[in-house]
Length: 106
Image 1: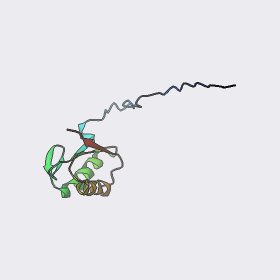
Image 2 (image 1 turned 90 degrees about the vertical axis):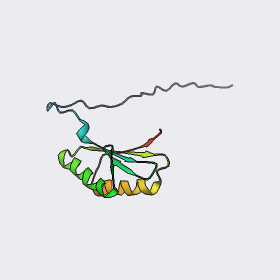
Image 3 (image 1 turned 180 degrees about the horizontal axis):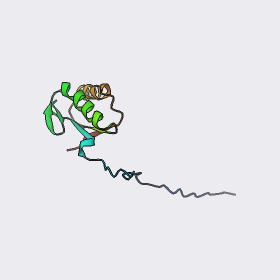
Image 4 (image 1 turned 30 degrees about the vertical axis):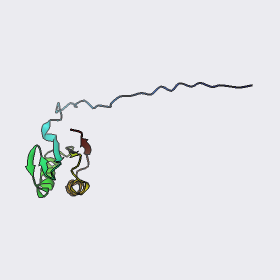
């Protein structure tokens, strides 16, 4: 005698979002620090060319204005791990707790 069991698992997919509270303050562009590691070894902060020494002060400024600021690090393919590690070290030294790391596909 053979017993075959068939099970179906429902998987919920979605994204949790938090709507602005009673203060009505929605997150804006100023709460996001956009850092980029480029293929040629350069760094950009908010789309402007920058040096590694400028990363920590930029993140600290953003955090002083909004302690919930998010640091987004875009790493281009071929930018090198050493540059990315140095950049993330500067972000850590600035005490950023909300960091997103993503790879640029283009």
